[in-house]
Length: 171
Image (cartoon, rainbow, N blue to C red; front, side, top):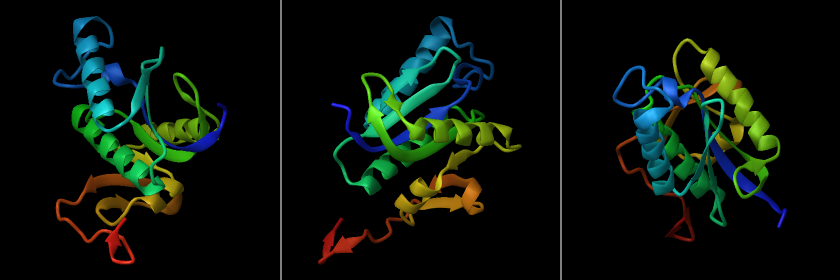
């Protein structure tokens, strides 16, 4: 099935050089395997499939039959959780149509993710760069800042703001 559907992609650069409890954690060996295992468990807990690439980067895909706002919320929470493990790694979160293959999504969403990741890595402050579609799908609980072409995801507000409703039912 080569059907294109909405996917949210969290991309992380240089996983092995930014992480975890050790400041210069290598990407190979026992410590690297522990970090990969931790990131994989974190991704799966947020409903994402994860793949580690040969260049040391990570791609986590949140896809499914759910409502687009729910996919973006899960991906946003995942990106923030990854930030908690990898404090200095460049992270990007994008959404778009893509064909989800056995391992990774294919299509323009990956290209946009790479562009956002490069922009995040070039920034002086390590940030979670998000695209306009993700920005429009996230609700008020997610703190964001920056101009339209350089939006950053900062945090999730701890207060439980009212959810969107349709005919009085939370959606």
